Image 1 (cartoon, rainbow, N blue to C red):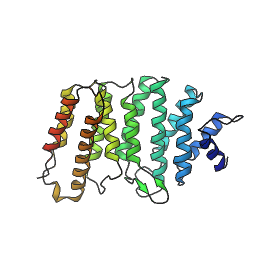
Image 2 (tube, helix red, strand yellow; image 1 turned 180 degrees about the vertical axis):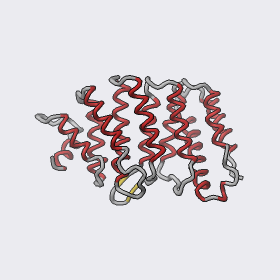
Image 3 (cartoon, rainbow, N blue to C red; image 1 turned 135 degrees about the vertical axis):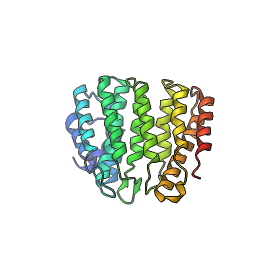
Length: 274
């Protein structure tokens, strides 16, 4: 199909076009995931799929197939920096959020399929080396922010227990505290904070478990100023804590809000690089 075909669908509020085949059109949308055209990749492929997965009759086997394809896409060019391969990975992980969200609403996956998918996403989070947010002309890459959105969806999954939520929190901290040549400035901390506070809101984790997780934020920063990579990691981590604190205060009816806020504030004031 030409681009105008998809623009018309978008203009028609994503209504499925009569006489067309859902599988064939979805396959075409998937082929646009690695595109360097931001309108085709983001404004059409992602937006159309995100709407159709809510309204169209995808079958469980189809969705499992999409899950497999998207996970495979996360490996393409993994480890590269400053290359166009990031778009395929970053938007595949965002598509994954929609596939898991569908399971949260209308379960079709077994618990082990969800936990295994989570492990592969967390491995991707660790291994992704392209930190760029907005790329001139080519649009948003935003691999970390998109992964954060997917982790927020996982944090809502009824298939995840205490261990799964702890894995999410641990992976987020480890990503942000790693020495880096980049400071995240495109809202990544806010997106990660949404995932963290979503995990808190489940009330699956005890306050002691959350406190133990927060306490690791204050360790290991002595003399961080002497190393540029550690200095950037310090600010990334501090910014994340601040975002979590703001998110905790702003979420209406968040269980244990006052206790959580106090724990986060303690962690923030304990982060000292000297």
